[in-house]
Image 1 (tube, one colour):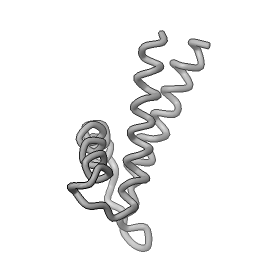
Image 2 (cartoon, helix red, strand yellow):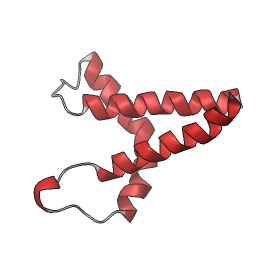
Image 3 (cartoon, one colour):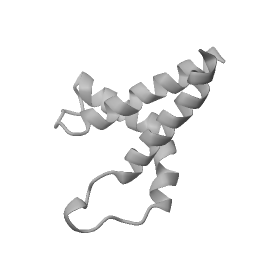
Image 4 (cartoon, helix red, strand yellow):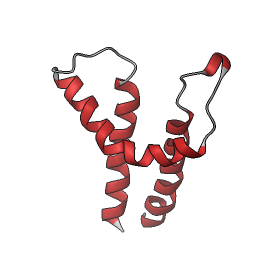
Length: 87
């Protein structure tokens, strides 16, 4: 069970860094910009189905990524179930 645990933790790391780096303006040609683009390519297939299910947010929270928050919570629960059982 160590391989799925490591994969989930690696994906969580990439996903969290994606969330953080998108808050800052970075040049697309910089290392941070290339990492941002790569992390979006890797994590977007997981976010898109959740984004399709969630209704659009209006008002003061418009633009806030609730789909990303849901994915983060799912990853945390999945990690706890798989990795918590492995220890």
